[in-house]
Image 1 (cartoon, rainbow, N blue to C red):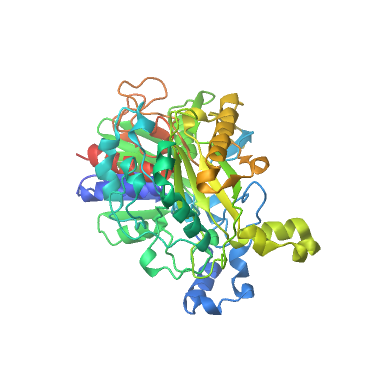
Image 2: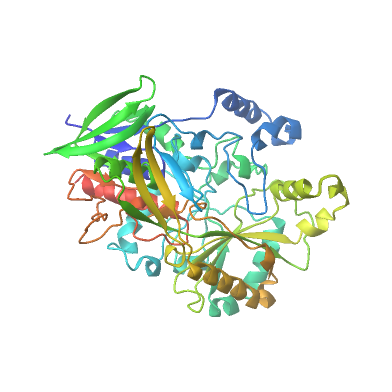
Length: 520
């Protein structure tokens, strides 16, 4: 057999590219940081799975909630069953410094899929009209991704703009979400005429085996929330696939018809050189960009990232709902709302609606302390909804990055200049939602609107955007930059813009597309 293809990274883009390469009969070596869940936490999960959720006392699951302290601006850092392993650094990785920026990269097995909210939505053509590829080009690769990624999604009005590609059974709605959904359905025609589409959430979950224990925000004891580490483990049964954790890529290069990946073995603290037919860089947009800048010796050169502005907006209904607590329910996004009003912005605004979970109560308890027992929690929480929203990157602030060489190692410096248009768009969103309250019975709690720092939503990319005629820090439609032929960027760093509708699914489809075409 000839030289392998090397894939750097085990996150969503990495496994999608690897799956495409293996489908072409290629040999694949995956180099990865490989940080993983601590053994003692894995053992605790095993113990939980051996019993029914009805037997899980608060004391028994307290370790899953460790480090997840909610604030009015959300969760400072979403952990995986109490562990920060997806965020831990390793030797040889660049340090991130930011001004007004809150973002990270992952060296964990599975990347950020270990801590994501599992929401999946494709991109509508109107939101990628500036791309050199189309939604039709991505369509077969969305379908291919759903061959190995579970999905809970059904038929609804969203399919007009956002195909499902594979219809299964959506997750059941909470009592609060069910009451709201009924109201939306009653006024669907009017809402559509006023540019609001809605549907059940689409989630990367093994819904058939979900026990609905209500702990989704902390992780799943049964491993039913999709993590690409699961696909890595499944691929290891393929004789053409080899997974090599404990490596941090330092540099990539090509010579003639060969490519090379230089990676630090964190166990031996030595750099090893791997020879490949092609190298596919899927380390996540920050790490991939730093790797490419180092490989191109482009220190101190500025690159620009596209970012989808992340925000939180609490909403209230005047009528409460009985039995709203998460009894035998999931606590991830319940409904998706898509604003398509050109008076707000020409681009889709994506809103994910959440209903009660115990983080709501934990926040109030932490604020009120000893007085929390006097708070009318059932009355309040039965009426409270939370919208988690995203803007298109064209409506959001941009990140600027510069890789700098220092005596203690490389530092990736990030900044994000203010942009008044972003705040203005958010205000138009709030006004639009307020104008619909007679139809939805949802009232925005406008003073509680929280716009996160740029990068906080982890929907970032575009540092080497694809172009039909790439120049400078651009790539071609196969993710190749600066005249390279055998080194391909395959994660969101190649996406010319970041649409509001959840970046992961499209990053996976595009990585699968590049892996399929580059291997031919």
